[in-house]
Image 1: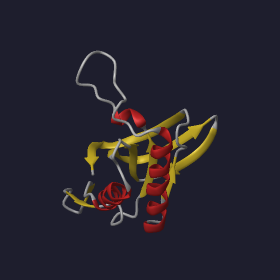
Image 2: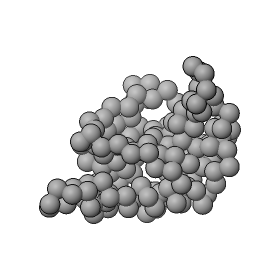
Image 3: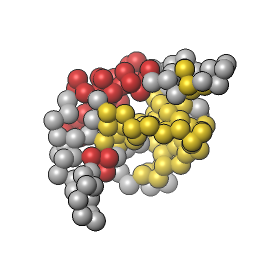
Image 4: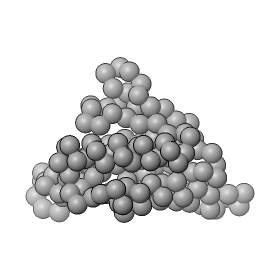
Length: 145
């Protein structure tokens, strides 16, 4: 399971002109689910999302996590993160989880995130989403479980 995280000043997701999720300061996490991923991988990734230290402390060092800065977490499913781009000029999605399994694990991650943290928003699985964000830094990391 992968998450491309971006530290943001704010971010939102819109589907068919309807806003489905919005956060202010926090993390936008684009979530890619691969074959073989399971609940344990989702739990490990959630722990990283909530505890990864990417926010500045009083000395301007990345020492604070999402919870310490009372930030929001915006989860957006993005199967293209599971693409194999090593060969050719077209991505292969053979390593991506089947849609039903990807949806199940994404909703599992979302439910666990909402149980662990109060400021969680999301996009819609498999929808054509428009994501708007202001990347703060810019700060972007690829997390894997």
